Image (cartoon, rainbow, N blue to C red; front, top):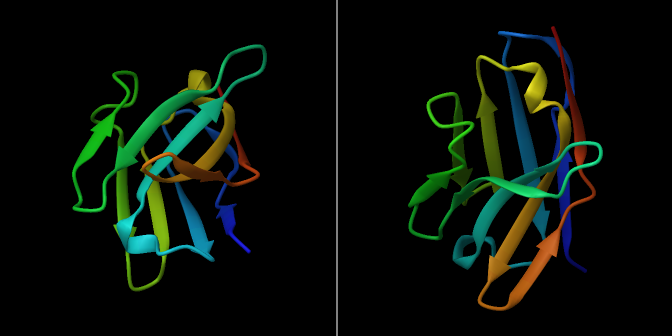
Length: 115
């Protein structure tokens, strides 16, 4: 059974930091591209950051320079370090694992940034 379990969300003030974690089980973690997506109220889900199996990364323009995605294959975990948070970063953040056409989603963790 595949599980992606996000943690680390919460309520912070603008300018503060959070680190999200996503622990994966039931997949060959090291071969999967891992991603963080977010969905704000009334908006579509969007890609925040992605890291491939070989460690290449890409980011949404809105988070470049503030967020960092990383992975620890020994722990089957992907992280999202979020610095200088803004109110517009408020959303439910979802973890995604993808290998070719097969992908899985976590249930999400809520990040709320107050101004």
